[in-house]
Image (cartoon, rainbow, N blue to C red; front, side, top):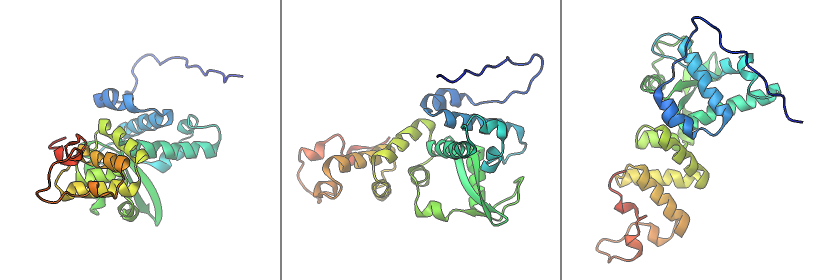
Length: 244
């Protein structure tokens, strides 16, 4: 038997509060979101941030986990609601829409989310430098050790290339699904070493490793003065990329 469709009585007349959304959300973010829970999480964050004041605005994951109205749309049981909420915000951060950071308050770890906007990125960098001014909540410290031990592809890109745009985020997520983590890390390392800081160059390395094998001689640097071969003129060759 199909679930009963829940109805909505309509919006109220008269003045009402409005939650603003940037145009990039509709033109670049909305088309690539394929998960309803993730969409709910992003819209919820926009709403919560609109209620705050000041330059440093963020959402504590615990606040979302304690909002019974929001949780009602994230699953049927409390366990399912918590699991789906955590996964939704995590996925939005992996996609590049949000910035995730873990802090300590009273010795207890908390996850905070910022919008991946200029102000949001600036706030996250301030926290990582130990500048905790302007926060509504007092914190003890920022937890960054785990992030440095096993960086995901988004962090690698931001640290070595630049800002992750919503259009690029889906390509990065697909690469994480397609290639091993150690391949991704090494490909970024090679891009930095050869001063070829573009996703096109990095992705071409990963594609060649997947096609020909990572440790074959043809995947390493060619000796100086070597002759040109058919493989060297392949359009996937990283050396042929100039700019992304």
